[in-house]
Structure formats: C-alpha cells, structure tokens
Image (cartoon, rainbow, N blue to C red):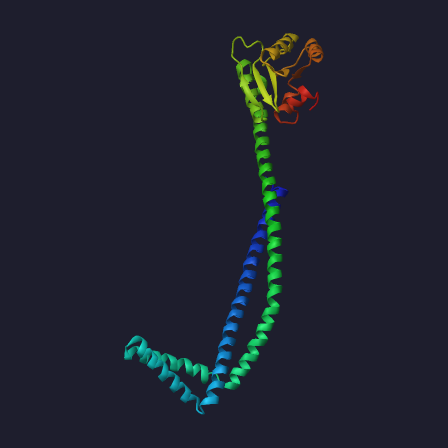
Length: 304
C-alpha cells in the first residue's frame, strides 16, 4: 500500500522536530557557555583588581615585593599557630599564603595584567552584546519547535483517524466479500449484526421465538431501529413490512426497516413507502455494508 499524504507529512514533521530539538540543544549549550565565560571573566577581573590594589599597597609601604610576600606569609602563619595551636598547621597556612601572595604580587607581571584586563573587558563587552542575540535566537528556535511539535501532534491524530478508518474500510470489504447472498435465517441475522456493529451501531438480538417480527434492534445517535431480517431466495412480500411496523412499537423503537439479501415485491415497496418503513435489498445492502449508505439517514432523513 502506498504511503498516504498524512503519513509522509508526519514523517517529515518528525524529522523537522528532531532537527529543531537538536538546534535547541546547541543553542542552549552555546548560551550556557557564554554565560559561564562571563562568570569566569568576572572572576578573573575581580582577581586582577584585587592584585592591582594589593601591589599598589605593597609598593607604597615596602620597596621590595617579595618582602611583602615574606611578611604576609609569616604573619598569617603566626595567626595559624595561634588559632590551631599547632606549628605544623601554621607552617601549612604560611605556605598557602605565600603561594597566594606570589600570584597576587608577582604573577602575572604588571604589563601582562594590564593587557589581560583590557582584553577581558573587551571580551566581556562583546559577550554581553552577544547574549541577548543568542537568547532571542534560542527563543525563536523554541517557538519554531513548539509550532512543529503542535502540528506533528495534529497530523498524528489525523493519521490515527485515517488508519482507524482504513481498518474499518478493510473489515467492511471483508464482510462484503463473504457469500452473504447465500445466507438464510439466523446466519443472515448474525451477519447483519456484525455489519451494524462494524458501522458503529449498538446491536441487540431479539429472542428467537415470539420476537414480534423483529430480529435485530440497532441503536445509533439516540435512535432505535427495529429490523426485520429476511435471508431469502425469493422476493420479500408486504407481510415482512407489516411485521416490522408492528414490532417497532413493541420494542419501543423510533423507526422500522426490513433488510434482505433478495428483493421486495412491488406491494411491499408500495406499503413501505406509505407507512414509513425503510427497505434495504440486495442492491442497496453492499452500500450499507461499506458505509456509503447510512441506515440511520435512510430511516430518519429519507436519504443516504
């Protein structure tokens, strides 16, 4: 079976949604990288600002910067010994302080630090200008993804309905292909019960004896239809029409019908037209089985 237009649309939309989802992930990742880089730049600038202030202070009080490192390390080591009451802990604190002061006072050099600050400031400005554009692009991609996802959902629902309809259509064709013309009595009743069930009617079988001329009662759209079933070889006479009309009241139905796999006599057709009984013969029944003609419409609207 050739792939339907809706199925192709669903396949295309699934591919588009997948591509949009990947684009969203890439956009989100890029935006996150920019924000993380801005945080890193802010941290680096803060450190360099601190280093610049510390160097200015040391240069104003001590001629030799390494001397400032030694003094700071010794002082903090002494504080460490006092706090922890352990020479070893004080030494560790002093070493850590010395390393930190090396980076604050000596590394990077003043010229490199100044150059780095200028470079980071320029990069920060560029990234801050880029962030709104990236955020806007991210929102646009998400909007396109949402639209495609919504359309995909709708197309999937349409495809599901088409598939259900196709399965019903197939089952109706299978029913039509059965040798229903050769069915008699209960066999034909059973066949029609399957047909109307497939068509969406609620089907009620009447008792075999004392059924007041009604073999099936089918309900649809809030209406009940009493059906006289005639699996005949010969033409069906007006007696069946009379029985269907009588049984309609007995079963509290809204309409009566006679369905046969044969034909109706002229008198049966004439009587049915006068008392409002719907007739379905061997020529009309295939259309009913396929759902092209609706029994409910025939009974209550007078047309298919």
